[in-house]
Amino acid sequence: MHAPEATLEIISPHVFNWKVWPDFSQIPDAQQPFMRYHTLHLGQAVELGARRITALPANHVVPAVGFQLDSGEASLVYSGDTTTNDALWEAVNQIGNLRYLLIETAFSNAELEVAVRSKHYCPSMLAEDLLKLRLEPEIYITHLKPGEVDLIMQEIGACVHGFAPKMLQNGQVFEF
Figure 1 (spheres, rainbow, N blue to C red):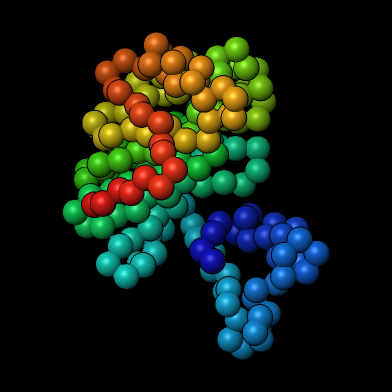
Figure 2 (cartoon, rainbow, N blue to C red):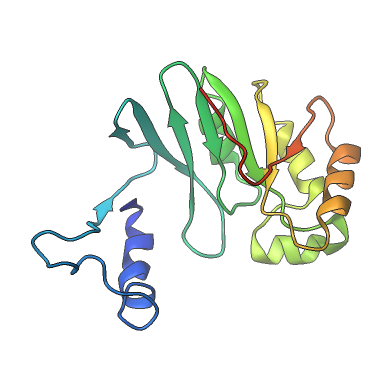
């Protein structure tokens, strides 16, 4: 597992702790575990076969990052849980081969205060931040609040100008 140090410090004692999940860093044994932990720093790329994955800045109430997956021919960026975050947009704008941007928008505009407090996007906040994007990727929206999917996508359509974000679909495949 490659993750920021703050995430790795949380994973073992709170998730892979033999109470919530088995500790896969000890299975089948400590010398040959199913899971090994590696610190991933923002901006650091890790080679995964013919692809590279790079951690991008996120702004959330718990430690989080986004990711750039780069095939060499094109890149996909997944924001992870985040809210307004100039560092993310600065990093994204440096990706010359960006083809896809998957970004969360968890709440409707009526829940602006919840979005702000929980550090998620609502459509008006996303629209404001997309003005910082100087590239023209295909944009897909993820992490929509159940029961408000249609409303959030309608609000995105009304707020976002210059882009045509679509809702990410289950099973959707991105080839690049």
